[in-house]
Image 1 (tube, rainbow, N blue to C red):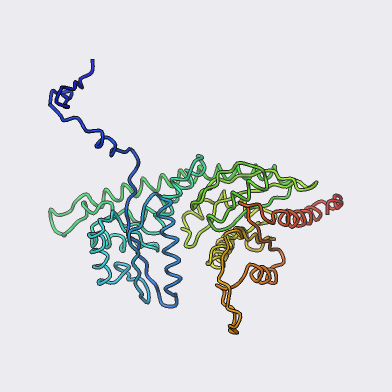
Image 2: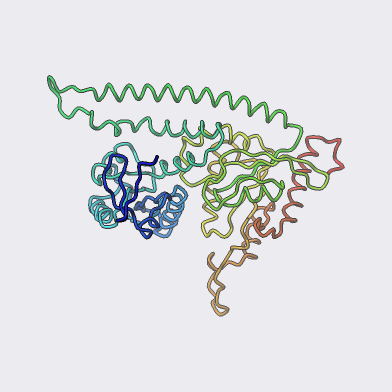
Length: 422
């Protein structure tokens, strides 16, 4: 029998006999099992030599990262400084302003658009009395949420532990020695050293696991050497997975969020009479944590060993040139910058511009460039460029023709006896 017995007055007795009022239908409708998003304040320093507009663009991207992680931004705070304060990242006056915003808006935590040193992190937490996340922590959290396969989870865990290792001291402030002298030596340092040793052992174990994964991936790539390999690279959320699904007729997960794809996906594609392998890789981002570049080495090796790169760019993003530069920096870090590359400018359906007045004889600013002007500009810089919309399937045939031409050229060099393909 149930212990929950309603009586005539709309009350019931619980399992220990206490009389409790039954909730009204209106009250029951207010109950929800949905997760309440955490609220945050975004903070950035605008250093000398960087415009406020550029800093705002960085903060907009940080807000998108926060939303991808399930949070909501209440306020954006920017301070112009020659360089971030080595102690608290921002100045004392701005710190007081952030404290007032936090109390007034009831924010749960603060997110900083840079990687903080352990000292900065500890000082900010003490001054603001709340959680402090930097850009690296936020990206690592998103990667942890997105990881699905055991390989991705191992890579993300290694990156998190490498980031955590130098910041262990802030986790044990209640055990730190406040004063010296006889009888004042506590267990703080012993506990920290114990945790540091355990984390180092875990890092060593994860690296051994990734070494095994690297060996397996290398063997898989060796078995695929007979076909030309093409890798999709680009900034996060530019439409690589959507393009992958279009070209390979696959069902790779695609979503309008950052880092929707972490795991490498390889599909066989045939254009005309020419087969090749197409690989979808993890997206890049500005200020990509070095721990992730190291941890995702086995994934990025697919890019290093590819014969041709499809560099996908979101042309509708006003900051697409800097995104291209950020991707090129990462490609340079892994030694893949000099590979044959096709620039694929995606999302032409979302591109907008303000047409310049006819009687205005001043040079046309970038904000007033039409799509044709952009196309002519990039085609003069790089002959291998194509403008498409993967979502609306606009100009995809032109991409297929260019892709066929480049893959056939590589194939004819590798297999001269099959030159009929070219």
